[in-house]
Length: 106
Image (cartoon, rainbow, N blue to C red; front, side, top):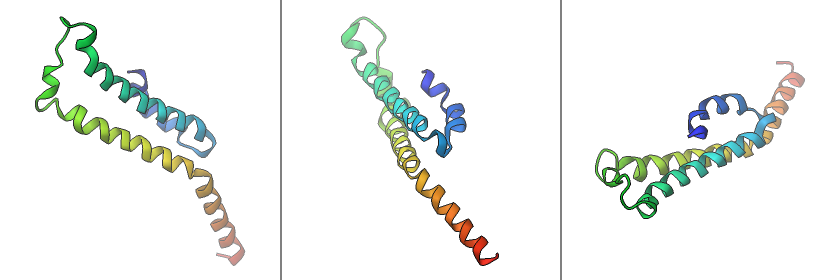
């Protein structure tokens, strides 16, 4: 839960090329958090047969969470990682574009 509750703050602080490694690590922790949450939800009855039932998660509207929202958030994390891997190249492209504009006298 810590990863999910601090995600917006951490993303805001780490979304810069100089923090690329930490940003990617946090995204990987987010994916791990989603996998653990779904995994523990599906195996809860195996650990404690008399415990809380996961039956409500199999009918609408709660069934949307594991079948749609979790895969969507995993896709978002993968997209963030793919974009973060290109941050250095994008920064160089922006700087070279600015240098070209200065040389042309714009």
